Length: 345
Image (cartoon, rainbow, N blue to C red; front, top):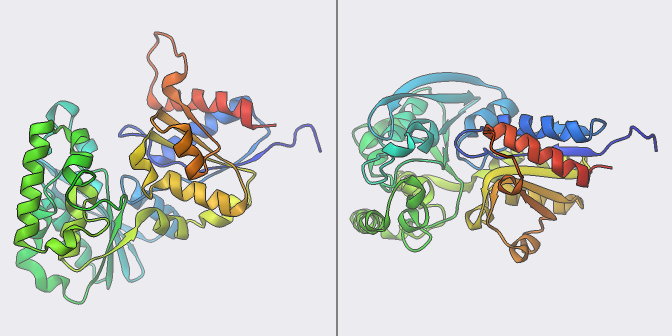
């Protein structure tokens, strides 16, 4: 083997927290990795599980045309959101309408935030004349169970007649319960224990008013219950990671590599429920390739790593950066450079 022959690395990250999109995370990993292993061959494949970056990733993989509409943000302010039109299918992203990243940390209010803008986005997608609309669900500021979404379309149900609706969810969580929209996810949206209890009560009342059977289905709790709202409109639920992996040819690109590297902001229990890290790891296992995870913070123990099939996980929080502040992409690049010294030839 030539001395300058390197490792073929598939870099397939999710979004790296609210400050770093998947494509930016891929660039940061590549920048750091090549500092330590300049002869390695990197294939950058940003991914999404239906949350932030869903439209970007699908646009790169599928092409198509993009239109921009204005909808209500999570607290009612107007925000731009895109509709990706590919053939007879439109793709939209709930996080572009009501994403957590649209609300400053000090203003986050899981009780007041609404999914109304997602309903407006759905209607805009239907108005393009397509036969199928796929909604990426995840990374939202709301926990209203999709009540706002349903309210937005209630007077326009005829515009959705005959439309095939798909909810691409980032999690299989039900609407209610310990792992549901309120108790499982609302804390990250600014809800304290009292607020989470109030939200859980409101979700139960909403399910009783509408369809309690749908509330227990996998994915109903996704996006603060937007998954449930879409199901009330007749949507089929699919795993967002699997959908994106299919159109991005993840399996083929893993087989062409020696090593799979994925990245995400926080590697925790929630990450183990059908998200990007799971999709990449399973694809790597099918191809007989090792998987390495880079994260801002790792909260998964060795037993969980072994069960999932991850060969190693590294945390940026454990890197000694000193007192000088670093941006998220700089931290990820430094982490990637350190990991490359272990995993490259």
